[in-house]
Length: 208
Length: 208
Image (tube, rainbow over all chains, first blue to last red; front, side, top):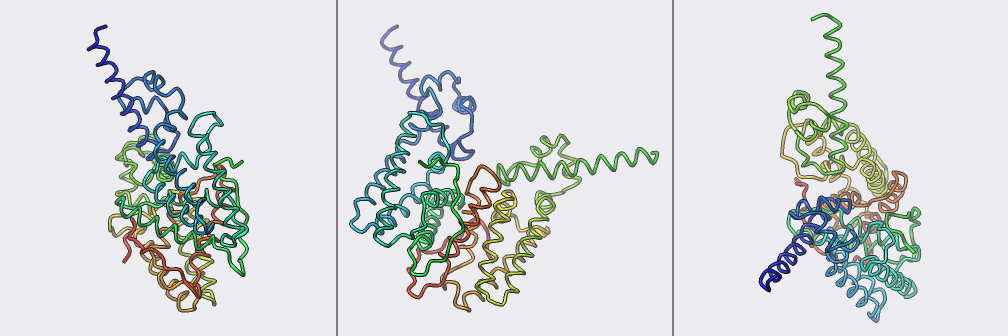
């Protein structure tokens, strides 16, 4: 193989990889995570084997496709934990995460979906994000800002609910999420005379 | 045509109509309202002409497919308006509508989607429901229960958000909606020291 040919092959592989990722992000956003790998391959105009060569499992594909919003998510949660007022930290996390999720619908689906317990980076990062969130919730309750009966499932439910909001432009969508986040924060606030809530339920996301 | 043949034709037409409606409900719930009529025809194993014979427009199909939940919706709103305490009436409407919408996802999509302004029963019923809701909101504010900056768009946003919640069984789904409704009601409550909200935005639904 000449150097030119091998360079061309590497550059084709890079193009394929980028196209597979773009197609996967769009497909997961529009149709959820159940879109089969062979359908992603078809839309990216490559063979299924090519997809598997780059991403051996769907989780590996998710991890790479959503590496950026996942990193942003983690950074937001860490910023929230570092806030000197835990309730302000909680509010910041709800506001910022809802905005990130609003604009990356596929990521939002992936973040709130039941995934096979695999040792892939996406699941590992999500586990870590959830553990940090639980710690943030604990501190916000202790500080008296967050209602005592708030559970992680309420956060997952709020994030799923945020996914459901549709608007005609990304700007309107982001603005709607800002208002929605502010409303959810009102509902999560500790109340001197709290109204009892119906019980929380386990949703798709396995919570450990 | 013998009486038997004509009876057979009538019964086939009835079967087709029922099948088209069932297929349409499932398709709208899973994929939204953009599913083309010819795709609904394909899944119902009839020609597109047969669908158009029964339902000349997609709005006519929507109106028939969702006549039942729409009637239930209207009854709930009327019950809320009849409540002697307007804030209790408001809470009842939010709770019951979220439960109806949770279990009829296609209806929920139709209820919160922009539709061509047509003189069909679905759009007309929805217009009427929205007018009654606006009156309910006015009374609940006047009675001091509902926050003054609440707008119809907040209600639409909450209904869309409710659509986004996913659960593995209809029972879990309904239970999640009950908790979500209770949380949204907390956020809509008038507060002696209200926290200002980010501005409301126009969502898909045209509000008159």
